[in-house]
Length: 233
Image (cartoon, rainbow, N blue to C red):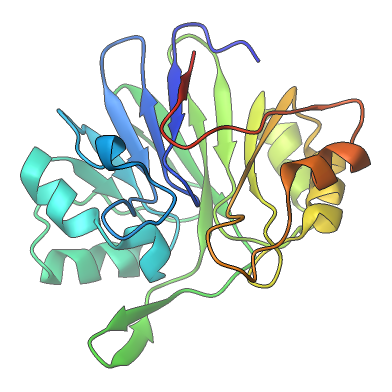
């Protein structure tokens, strides 16, 4: 995996901290305070320039509001989710929709499809939060990273490959609420990345998929099992 100065830190589940060569920090799917896989030392940040939220489930946005308020971070999400975040006190939202691109923290971000639900738990009710999404991030050094969000495999991942050609893909493998390694292996065959980073596994007992299971199904592709809180790059 060639990152060319990008530093990736998995914070457990689907949460990633990404530090760019230009000195910017992005957080994808911010769930740290109550995340049992996130080390205590990794739950605080000196800066966050942008937050990317793939969808509105608690285990992907639980800390979006406090972190955005604390750091003045630009929060990117689908329109309905950004509207809800504004109602909760986030003043720096930058909504978008599938197929659209924008530049945040000097990174070109393209929103793509995900095959998942997207209800927001608001008090004692679940409200509509738009659709679930993924993101392709293109960095100034040319590296392209695809964070798939929560999703099943879908055939149009081949279009993501053809349009954006991500070098690194972050795929959920836990099963039950997302793909298992079986479906993730099919996704890898559609996307044809250099490196796969598994996520959304092991956090809770039902999330039984493991990186070794995926690696056994895609022997010709690098499957990188990251350790929460330990940076690479």
